[in-house]
Each structure stands twice: as C-alpha cells, then as structure tokens.
Image: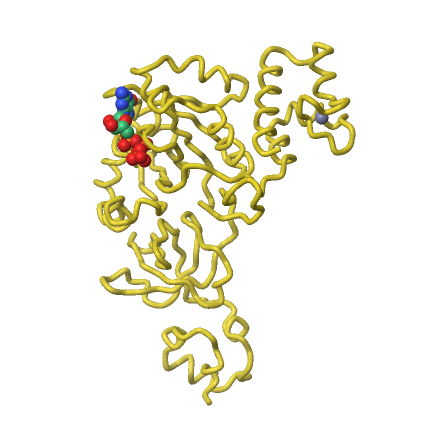
Length: 352
Ligand SMILES: Nc1nc2c(ncn2[C@@H]2O[C@H](COP(=O)(O)OP(=O)(O)OP(=O)(O)O)[C@@H](O)[C@H]2O)c(=O)[nH]1
Ligand SMILES: [Zn+2]
C-alpha cells in the first residue's frame, strides 16, 4: 500500500506532482494528511461569495480576479464554511469552465452572524462570516413594520458584533416617524426610501468599505433596493454576478454582490467599493444561542450602570433592585438614556 492511500481525502493526489513524491518517498504511513503537509504552502486565498449544495463560489484575487468553484476538503467536513469566509484553496484554482478547487482551511473570522432554528434551540447556524454591517430593510406599510422583528435583527447584529443600519421603504405609503421613534435611542444610521426615489447614492456611500448583510421580511422591497444598488457592480464584475447572481441560485441561498458608488465618489482614483450579502431565504432569526450579557455590553453606558446590579440580574422591568431602575428613578438617565433603557429591555425581552 502506498503511503497516500491511508489518507481519507480522495482528491489528494491532485496536490502532489512528481517532485513531491520524489523528495518524500515514504513518510510514516499512518499519519493523517494534515500532519504530513500541515501548510498547503501552495494554497491561494479566496473569499466565499456563496454556497449552493456543497459547492462554494469563491472569489480569488491574486494576479487577476477570478471566480473559482470549490468543494470542501474532507478534513473540514465538521466545520461550517459560510458566505464571507476567507479560505485557502488548493487543486485547480484556475476558475476555468469545469474546474474544481478544494477548500483546505478557513481563516479566522472577525465576526459571525448566527441564528438558531428557533428560540429554544441552542444549536447555532452560521449565516455569514466577516460581515461588519447589517442593513435591516423594513417597510413603512404593506407589510406593516413590526418592531419586534426589527428588535430580533438588532439582537442578532449585537450578538455578532456588527453595526446595524436601518432602511425604511415605502414611505410613500405611510409616515415612518412613529415606527422609527422606537429606535430613537439606539443611534442607528437610518435611510428612508419611497417609490421611485430610493436614496441609492446615500446607501451606497454607507456600504463602501464594508461587508453588509441585508435582511428583511418578504415584500418589504429588498429586491427592489438590491437591484437599484447593484447595476454598477454588474458592470464592474459581470462574471461574478453571472456566477453568484440571483437568477442561478435558489432563492434560499445567500449571495454576495459588489456595490460601487457612482462618479465623483472615487477614492484615490478608484470607485468606492463594498459588498452586499443578500440573504433571500432568511426572514427571521432564532435567538436561542444568544447570551444576554453580549447585548448589554453593546450598550456601554448602561452596562456601566448595571455593574451595580445584584448578581444574576435580568435587567428586565420586573427585576428586583436593578441598578438601571435606580439610575432612572434618581434622574441619572437623560431622555436619550431612558429611550436606550427601553430599547435594551425590549431587546432583552425578545429572547428572555
Ligand atoms: N409603494 C411602494 N412600493 C414599493 C417600494 N419598494 C418596493 N415596492 C413594491 O413592493 C413589492 C415588493 O418588492 P420586492 O422588492 O419584491 O420585495 P422583497 O422584499 O424583495 O420581497 P421578496 O421578493 O418576497 O423577498 C413590489 O411590488 C415593489 O414594486 C416603495 O418604496 N414604495
Ligand atoms: Zn439589572
């Protein structure tokens, strides 16, 4: 039996050319492959743009930008690989028609947007890795905006450590002010959009330099917004959108789309660029995995006050001796502070 036959990864021979075999004729036969070649020194780095039935669409940008289709190496079969992951690829990384590369490593993630199936399920599922913004799209009417759903998106954003943004569409149908008042204390960048007058330039400017996940309930106008934001991206990287674009994937898969700002917004001669990650199949987030402490820590001002709370304080309105109540009663919270406390309590209550 030759030494590589002990490996559990069928595709391995593709890593080895003749010279590999010659310089290492017979390493210890039983070693797992990761120890034989821990480095995969010839790997190229890419970014996962989308996942579809075990196939990963990966953007590689070394000498030239190209889209590579990849599978996952056997040794990673227990690891979730998500849209947005930075990965190391081996095998055929040419991106040529019919070529297949293999993901051998997932790089450390800066953030991880997660959900559970429902609030009682503690098993988390990875939605998107390495995003730094969450753009929540909600309609002023038709469908009616639901504060509770937005609260859940906010909890998911704070849990992931990413910045929430809010876009209220269909403001031609209703005044968004009463709904927006619920979030007044949260300092969330907010856009409003009406029929035929989406603030595309403003939103695009907020997306430059960021990796932004879009979420929203069905019918709020998310696709309309994406289509308004993305034409320039199609121009810039047509084949990327051809591969990852909405048409080809099932509506449940997550796709990455490049956004560019228009003329006059160049940075160092280049158009401003960012990524939008659309999550068509993800309408809601189970929050069973979320730790309330993480949400409180996102409200640094209130977290400081809550250090005086009794151990195990839930900080909910019925919590005995909650220091946040004392602060409010003693007038230590101004109007914004009181609004923030209301918001925090609403968020904590969403998964209490
Ligand atoms: N009045 C009004 N209608 C809008 C606006 N934006 C989108 N619509 C309409 O709302 C409907 C739903 O828009 P979509 O963009 O398909 O909504 P979506 O959120 O992508 O919904 P799914 O396709 O189910 O995910 C369409 O008929 C749009 O034309 C708006 O600002 N004002
Ligand atoms: Zn408390």
